[in-house]
Image 1: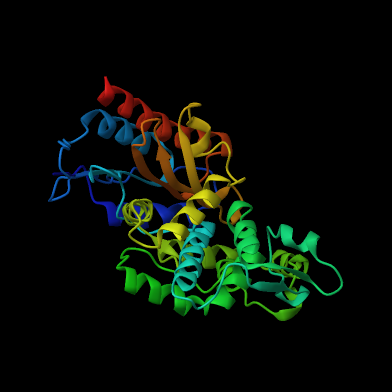
Image 2: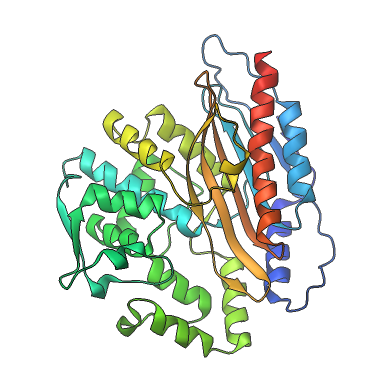
Length: 361
């Protein structure tokens, strides 16, 4: 069943461009609201009787409609198979959510004997990228040598850009990730060129080796004109190189949880790492109750003036009885402060928990 309340694609692109290109805080004219969708699987698992979750649908619609920005929300019941979304088929910047796809590609390579997680790997100063890279502090004169497993943990739990790019290179580059998407039949998700090139293009720059470490890159970005940066940001928001549909991400997370994408051991490895994530404790995770568990990956984009981009959190919410919900909340662009963004995300988590509680009564 699909309930349509507007035109998603036009609203998403139109709002993103208006927000990205406007330097005054005045709000753009209201756009037609995006659709709220309820999708049920064609085949219902034995013993399950899923129905359109009207209670959850209503709350997701309220949260999406009430947020001042371009937001997409998707929730999928892993066991029953239905999904609910607001603007769930729009293309949203992923930012560091894309580290999840590097992890999947890496673990798939381990499953096929291409590499072992205990293999050593070295991060050198020439590998340094930009923005968040805690691995820099772990380096000695000869760099930082550790296992692939540990570097993957650093990349995922601390969202380390350098660790991620080194792993991406080890597994074969962006082409290897895209090939994994094809083999695993994961539509609706794009993969960009890696952190250094992606962030540079968003800013209207080209990456140079002398920028390794990030300070030189920040100085060069600060020297750009506002017009140059704004034009580059508009291009990115209109057609993000790392764009993905919230519905597609929720579907991929559900398949990961069911063991459809990796071997049992690799599935458990990745879910355990995601459950240990240290980033975004007040995004989706901030709405948890003590008896629920959450394994997730966040993503945060660049800001230009008051415009924030790519503020995301995606993951798997698990109830005390083992029922699991794949959730993706992605903000393409907004001028709302961080606490407002966090409250909206926490509202999504609370809505899922309330729905699960009502169904169990």
